[in-house]
Length: 180
Length: 180
Image 1 (spheres, rainbow over the protein chains, first blue to last red):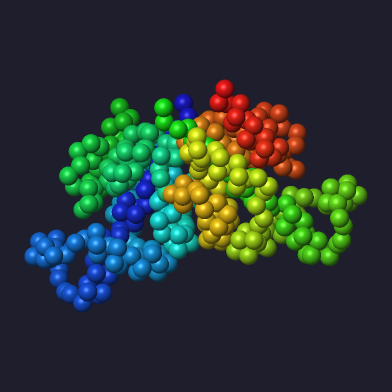
Image 2: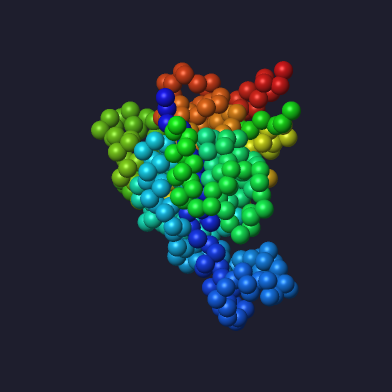
């Protein structure tokens, strides 16, 4: 039987955007706090979506994307999954065209065991032909034809439509359960 | 019924690589001719695949890709096809990562009626979920799951496995015949 294909989103699934975003937020708005969630509760006037739009010129840069930290266990679990599956990285890069090179170099550095022929920079993921898609975006999972796994992030907490994975250990467990 | 999806390759289908490649060849090897095919017949010692590899450092540049001419009628026919189909551009960009920006800007300039969310920069096109793929690469068409249309180029003349389209008027005719 041919190997099944797993497509994996990059931002917030492989690359941690949240920690660097909080640092950027503190620096640009000149505020100081330790707990971002507590800060947002104490400051209901902060509109997170508006803030992301305002800080977008700093996010859509080579430096920001090239230096994102890797999400815990992503490398180890993807390396394991490659034994039984074909792994593609499918990242919505068309929103942030200035970061193409940063994304490519980042993937080459942190995921050298995935061939660049298996990188996909796209927009709408309805075009992705795979058996599974691991993504934090509900919108993208809805467009996708195969089985969607919702990777938890602070913006998708309430959704119950998709199989939820909270971290890469959950991903590993999900695919182990598929073997039986 | 939802619209069907047509994925379209870029190099040698939308963008003419051959004319600029011949110019590059003449300049770098300091030769002069009018008819490239006749030149190759007269010079059997020229190995085209080897030459492409040798000239690759000039091809994998922003300048070369950004200035490629558009293949005749591609714009007109794709604009028409968009009325009945969803059109994606799927280009194998992972071989030439230095040209991401050039490809994006070129598509935005020459195909402004196709939304960047419908651009896909990929490697292996087995990952493309579409009903049709128009491509000059036999290798990519073989990997693709839907109906492949082979766009003629000097490197694929002998293949008979796929529906052949010699130019964009043939593409238009093919899709008109699908309507009936």
